[in-house]
Length: 418
Image (cartoon, rainbow, N blue to C red; front, side, top):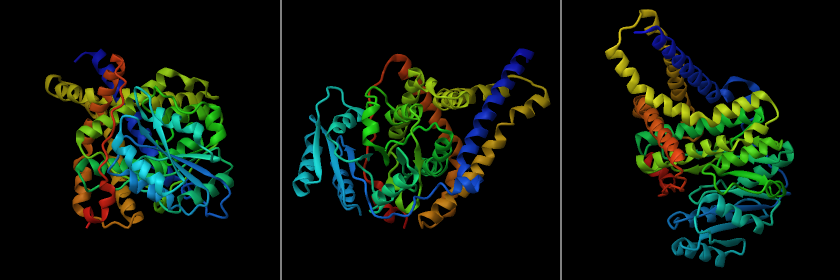
């Protein structure tokens, strides 16, 4: 084995260690300090004063749309409207939306006649019709807590925020082995990591349960219609503009969603997100962030798909190296350094699953913990496949929107978890 190879492989090992260690630190941010813990819950509600326009983009969502809109209309808040955006080529979903509008005047049906359709185009089509002081975004399958808007109203006024990011939580973690890990990803992202980014002044917003003051949203031009991660891209522009973002996560107020029902669906979803991050990185708006540390953080976060793809390619290379090359013992020991934060991350995930079950009053089962540990490496390989696919699609200029299928599995939680 040559010295050059050892040096190169050592650099790779160091990079992988940094990636694993920073991921772990961000995962447990809300557990590390009392200050971070105090940022998690929504403030207690008082007399509502704001008005809300809730946009629900819906494409081929006949199975779940009615329940979502019904939950939104049942909010304990006196001033809201729901704008359902449907495609002009989607008569099934449009029929459901029009029936909802006939039953309740607070529902508006907005028709998106874009030739090439995607979520940001649907959102921008509804934005000029919003009459509320705050615009909120929800997905068509969302299960929204009845008390959410009154807490968001209080959060805006007590924090003087321009943007409030609420929690989103996948719930059907017993549907499949990958659903378990996908659920915990959301749990750590919304209950911890987004709080870190908000404090740091640079935040990639979540795709729904996000609320933005209408005048600010119009001022920045709404959503980027060409970006596959329109939520992240908007978060970058708002961060550059100096917007104050408040993040809150209360289990009883988290918007409940479902994991993709198939591995193919999960890979396509992650491909879209990763490719969107690469688009935001290439667009370069993050270069206008005011400090060097924020710009480095943005560069690191947005380049994460490349890091995932690189890690995925490195797995077979490492296996071949073990067979084909002889290396000094000290070097071999050094290559195991990334395993330290990786093992620590799995331990934190086990604790996180127990905390998730406690927060959502679910019964813990030994086989759930066993699946969590057994699925660690396969899930990372799956994410690597999605990252590689995103990189290839971006290089080829393939930027079509691959929609995630929704079947309402999160609304069958009681049956699945029994």
